[in-house]
Image 1 (cartoon, rainbow, N blue to C red):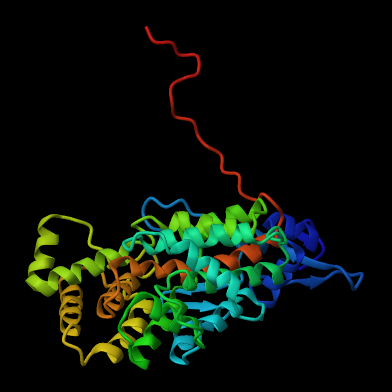
Image 2: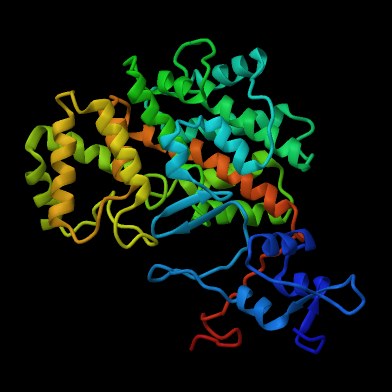
Length: 399
């Protein structure tokens, strides 16, 4: 590349991409951009066409989606699966990486995972008066709001502070679900298991729950994650950021699909999988737990999680219901099961409440905090969509 009008300085390239210079050089290290050195031997130059190409890249989108491009170094996704900072998530699961360690990986920050006894007691006290049927997501909202009120330094938006707030929220979310004070457990996933079911569970079954948390921790710019990044761009505190994500997660098309799958298993247990699927098809209802906007074939997260579910429950009588339903889905439907199918299977086999699938939000909190940390390092208020007005003319008057 010669030093012509097609060459951009680092400052110009970063401005055109809407990122900081540190992010620009991260693109170089990841092979997304190349640079040359100017004749002065010091100045980095970037090809304008390459910068524009990177800016205009588009991923495959579902019908009706409005594509948005945001540079991120957290998660990459292809048809074979997804990767956290370059590490295969399926391999992380195969290696039994604890959810806590994966969260630290997403945040690029290592800290202490501990919840002091006073905070734990206050969180349990706040959740105790709630009706037994209170959805898990509502309990998480209460816990996060309480933690915000208890933290006078919540507006410290440095990376270590935001990451530590993330650790506190995750631990407190689980502590707030306890029916009784069960005492500390080594892994957050083991604490969560004891909070959601009265069955002790085998090592393989609890391993499946940890895997679900890892697989669901982040998956690019899903609706809730995009909402969190918008909130981070206006410098919301970490508790407000997670509350924003929880609000978006409440939609049945995002965090609530596994509960519908759970109910399908309840019906299939009584009536038979073929009868239940036949009724759903006859009613022309949208089937939960199948298809994905990114994966045209199998959802790799579903495949990885279902393998662990099979290892944990194949010897139990109820597993036959799940296996039969899955086989019907694969044989009769044009789209393969997605991770919501396996998550619904896990909560049903573990004798959890249907809303237990909202543990999705606990897992995704790790991703939200990671995206918030990344967004807080960018220029403030990057998102300002322009509305195209289609209502009546302002000067129109009824006759």
